[in-house]
Amino acid sequence: MRLSSLARRLPESVWSVFEPVLPPVVWCGEGRPPASNHACRHGLLYVLITGIGWEYVPPCFPCGKTIKERLDRWLELDAFREAWRRLADEYQRTHRVNWDKVLLDGSKKPSKKGVP
Image: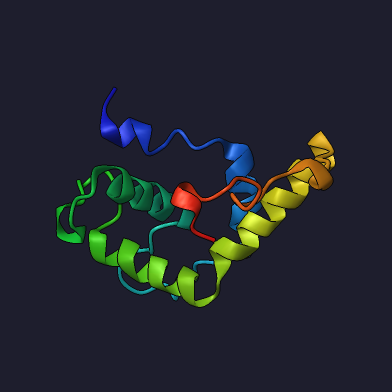
């Protein structure tokens, strides 16, 4: 499987939760139309999976500068935290997680070598 295909394998159900959190892409009608948030997300996943630099993003994705600028904007708006919260809420509604039984850290186990 090609890595560019792997970057596009995130389920659309996840994207449907993430997309409303992102600011809309606006084109004023001059120059080249901007890349969609969806295409930038694919490019970002490709960069994260491969670890390549922004300047080496293949032409099947938006250019690395565009992806980086979009990522900076999404981080500025805290979009990932909001999407994570929405996905967690959706998971809670569908699977009815019993939060009393969930262990969030390792405090229930003794530490190594008796260190408190």
